[in-house]
Length: 202
Image (cartoon, rainbow, N blue to C red; front, side, top):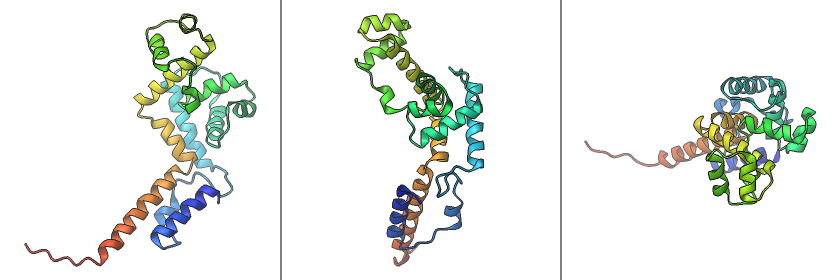
């Protein structure tokens, strides 16, 4: 059991006064074992999502679905682009592009050395990378990366963040955290209302 899971369990026990969980809680999504390994069913679902994204969007690399599934898994383990590149046997720029294709945008990807809204406006106006770079006195590579991030965020928004959110639910304890909090609230409410005498006259 990792540190985060232990913390969630402590919160659950403190809130509910019970160390046992219901069958529904135990079932979960089967995403992460205590060893940190991801089960086959979870990876199959990740592969389905990747395949759906490939059909819907234009990917910027020639990495196959198996490599992209591994990228999604390693990304949610905290791997940076250098580590992703090493795992996949590609350069960091290819790892970045593949990650962005899958809507896996990091906060650092949004950081640019100029006014972000001005850069966004120039890109939206249809100016090419060189023209935008000249106008803002930055490197064309920065513009190229920002354009890719902007496109990914637009796609993700139009899809209601469906793919990014489901990847996170499958490969992190986000779903577990939500369920524990919800069940704890329900149990607390039930306990609080058990002693209330109902005396309603109609």
